[in-house]
Image 1 (spheres, rainbow, N blue to C red):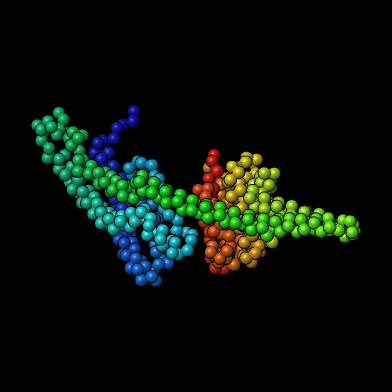
Image 2: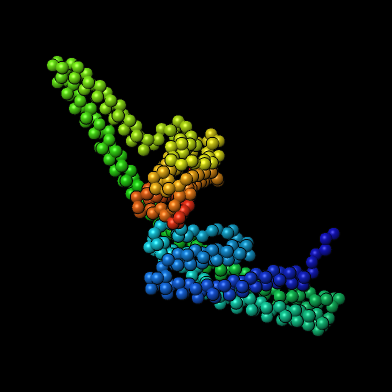
Length: 409
């Protein structure tokens, strides 16, 4: 039979585990002390404008630090860890990223937790270090000095009863749980904060979707007006001329009718082009993988395509396929026209409820979302479907566009 550990041994082991948690918290508290000073310095320089570029980077570093401590606290308390949903700081203009830092309640909770961790982390760890020698000394004295006649503390053999053993050391787990509890409580997003964040996100994505829809309608109207409509007007004029010449000059009338036929075919081609801009028929006929391969064949540079995630025959929702197709099409257009690249890649993978699309090139980079490169349209189209977009295009390259779209099971 497996022997049951002595109560004192159990108390020492639990105290040691709790103390390790508190000692790690001491190290983190020292980092938090330094981090508090750095955050204050960044805020001070941000007020003077020159420190604004450092503010989003400092916020991202603070987020990683706070999330690691939240994960540790969740493990200590035995509760599920849920990553905090922050406003994105990897994309957009500097002014927009600074605004997100200053309006994100989760980031402000992290900033509040940082100095508190510096104080309480040191205090609780120091208290734990004091309790160890005190606990061992007190427990040892009880074992030696206990009186056998005191039936409340010893059994009939003069042995210290279990409930009297290691009672000082039992404070270590209490302190560790206290540290983990206040960390988890302060950093964990409240339901109301999550709801507010979600509402703000949906409001922003809806505004983007409305803007993208308006831009799409204007594009279709422009294509119809400048393309198909103009050709149909010219077609009508040629047919009218042919009718006038039919009796007096049949040969000239036949020439006008031939021109009208050519104009009708050109107008039909323009209409097909407009229809492809609304929902490409190639998606219906060949699926997303075939449509993307057709796009890759028209790019001015060699394209390495990894489409294994959508080549299993399973179709995605039409809106998701169309969004992924237009993301790839717009990215390929930018590569051909602006990047100066010599090679490009496209990768589409399908995970648990998510479709990931990644397009990259080895061009000179420096893509600007507000310079008419179509990147704003990509972001709005993806946001309208509750997806996310990350664009990395430093000066000198390379350029990478990563899109994630929800696609169900």
